[in-house]
Structures are given as C-alpha cells and as structure tokens.
Length: 132
Image (cartoon, rainbow, N blue to C red; front, side, top):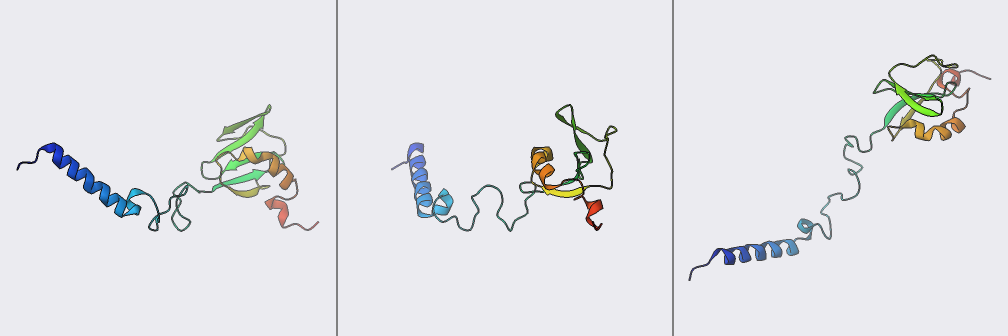
C-alpha cells in the first residue's frame, strides 16, 4: 500500500499536535518552564534598553534639563520644550547648580511640574553641602 503526500501531511500534523498538547511549554500554555512572559526581561536579566534609566541634570533655577548620555539640553522657550546641544543665554543658568536625576523616560520635561515642586531653588547639588 502506497501513501500519498496527503497522508504524510496528515500524519505529520497529527504528530505535531500530539507533541504540543503533551508538552504545554511548547504550546505557550500552562507552566512557562521558567520562561518570563511578562513585559520586558525578567528582573535578573539585563534590560538592554527596556528598563534603562536615563541620566539627567536638572537645573532648577533655569528650568533646564541636560541629558548626560546624549549631551543634549532641554529648555522652555515661549511655552514649548526645545532641545539643543548648546543652550542659548538663559537667566539663572549656573552649570554647577544642578540636581542629578535617573529617570525611566527619554523626555524628562514630562515630569517638569513634579520637579518644580520637588526641587525648588536651594535644593540643588551646589547648595546641598551648604548649611542654612
């Protein structure tokens, strides 16, 4: 008795179905076999950008952010946030008067209102060591 290609296909698909139902980890169901299925990598694995923190310097007196890695400033101009590798002349900007920040966003200005409340003038790195 000869088997044609349809019979081989049927036997192959039936075998694959049995394999997947017999081993739920291969089908992506049941116990995940130690594999992490949530968003992003598991806590013990390197993030490779997923949970990466961005380093900034926030200058509260001038309301300016500086991205340490990208060497880019974010500043307010006529109600809009702009970015530039160099700052225009801004009143109140002192390059030594900043607060270091580690944020999980590449847009630090989205947290601007929070930072204004949290870091009023006088709470920056420069004034942190001074006694009142």
